[in-house]
Amino acid sequence: MTKKEEILIQQINTISERGNSVEVKKDKDGNYVIYEVHKKKKQIG
Image 1 (tube, rainbow, N blue to C red):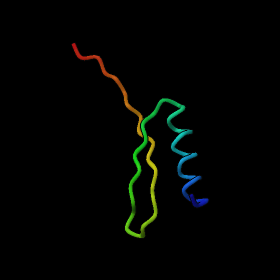
Image 2 (cartoon, helix red, strand yellow; image 1 turned 135 degrees about the vertical axis):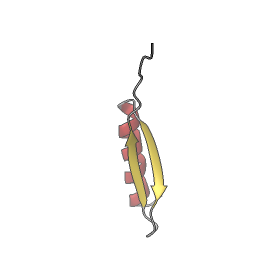
Image 3 (cartoon, rainbow, N blue to C red; image 1 turned 135 degrees about the horizontal axis):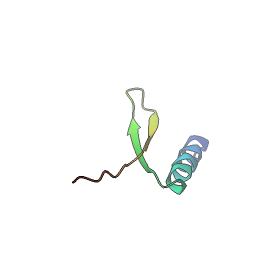
Image 4 (cartoon, helix red, strand yellow; image 1 turned 45 degrees about the horizontal axis):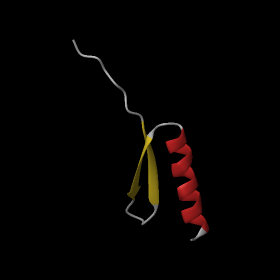
């Protein structure tokens, strides 16, 4: 595993430990971009 891949996995683990979801996408240059997704619950009614 390359150093870049290790950093990517470490960032994913850090975000997941906070209880948030992670999205990983590849940009047009071939680099991976990590998004932290906050899911909110709303009560309706």
